[in-house]
Image (tube, rainbow, N blue to C red; front, side):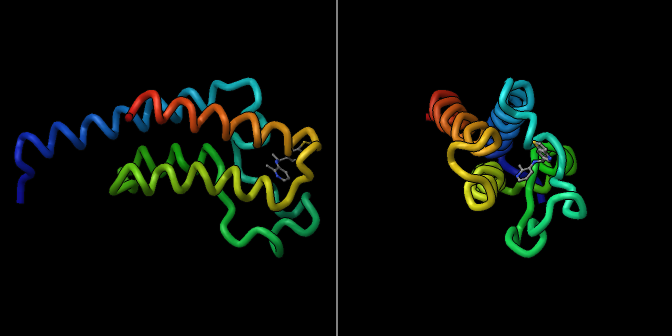
Length: 115
Ligand SMILES: Cc1ncccc1N[C@@H](C)c1cnc2ccsc2c1
């Protein structure tokens, strides 16, 4: 069944916004702890503490495979990256600070882009 032209155009707009947002997250100077999956063998406790690991390369893979059926599901995965970071890392650690900085940046950019 084909979408109406209106909903098809609307879907293209949100996909474009997701691509722009993800590219900006990947390019951010503080993105380094989040670019690839945490190596659960080399980070003691991570596997037990973090039930749903997520990172920018996994989000990139899902976006490429059209796995985000809505803007909300994309935003939920990005927030999962930052929530996992807050759960595992001290606020004032280097990684904790990177997580706070990236979350502030994402919140600002997606409201600018989509509101
Ligand atoms: C986001 C996150 N949360 C908890 C633990 C690790 C990580 N990131 C990984 C890449 C990572 C793995 N190892 C190191 C060593 C120094 S910073 C850093 C970052």
